[in-house]
Image 1: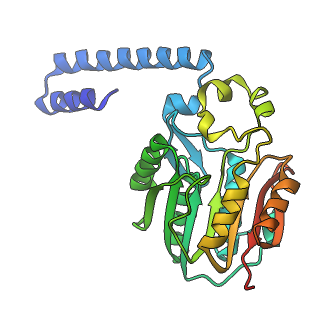
Image 2 (image 1 turned 180 degrees about the vertical axis):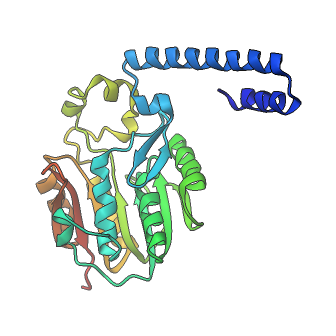
Length: 282
């Protein structure tokens, strides 16, 4: 039932108007039935459930979702875990994140590039906060709609203040930050050929701006790693998600940008998912 109807129902309850209250409860049931029917029609047409419900769970939080942003997926939680491992703030690490050498962090400055809903950056920020680690995060995206969603999620999900939302085109703009401890990114990485193979619910409903990355799907990684290298402090790390067939190619691009100790982490399905590297002193 809408908030307006909830207010009316509450007033009737306080006034003790039993007849009007009964009419309102019948109205509530009718509205619920209509909403359920409308949701069923939208789902039958292929629209993802997260867009119909308006939210999706990711890591430890629940995030607002609209068609302006990609729907958060469990595979991307590896970005959060890898970054937390670097900050020595991950409980019971398993899998490939154990390969990451933890640093001693008491004050973390980070950026989350191509942030979408903000789920990666906010989840990282909240977990650092829970561990008593002071953090400041910058969430960036080229999409105005995505920035609005990320801003709403910062307001409703972030445990404390310390997160900002900024417009940025990673292909053409420098990152307006410096001396960062870490950078996470989930850029578009679907090739032209792979776009044709996407399932209908993704192809027809999720934003192509956040999916497509030219012919080979690697368009964003050169600019991302080059600009990340400039924005990180010595010893800082970059973590970038990519497709399961792109690990070797993304590693080469990361090394070419100057990063060392470059490696690709597998997700819990055994697929290459996140490539990371360290900015060492020259």
